[in-house]
Length: 213
Image 1 (cartoon, one colour):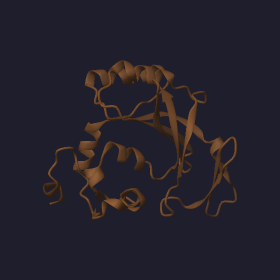
Image 2 (cartoon, helix red, strand yellow; image 1 turned 135 degrees about the vertical axis):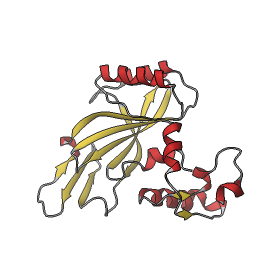
Image 3 (cartoon, one colour; image 1 turned 30 degrees about the vertical axis):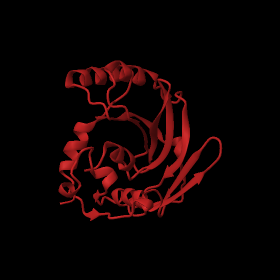
Image 4 (cartoon, helix red, strand yellow; image 1 turned 180 degrees about the horizontal axis):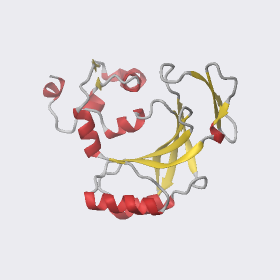
């Protein structure tokens, strides 16, 4: 079964994804800026690793976010959509300010990420599950701040994983995990091929043989 972190890293495979960090509550939270050149919209997603946070934490986090003002830090990666999902060319201009340009096949115009409209949707991937009443409160609070807040927690992970039967199984030497296997698993997942891979598919205390079978 895939982890919530895996879904955070592989969702929105049609977008150019810029990996950033958001400083909040004394910790750097992993986040992604996503540019959908087809839809001409930009999205923002945040991954919250802690498992036992209260509603006040999320209130403060949402209150921090202001479009065009909130400071983020580049964490060293840009993920491009596959050639199958993007019908054109992409160019990354590694300068200040950072810029991504796209040109669709047969169209002479290059479109800049600077001109893409910012969506009001913030996708929150949280290892902390909130009760339904608190989640509705949080969504209402986000709406007051001008945000639309899809909240993806372990309930999202569990229901989605039930629908995804692995098509690939990766058997490997543990020494190859960092250099080869994790990248292979992520690459297959981005190509919409569900993978059984121990780091993503085994929960603490799970029986290895039962999970594989």
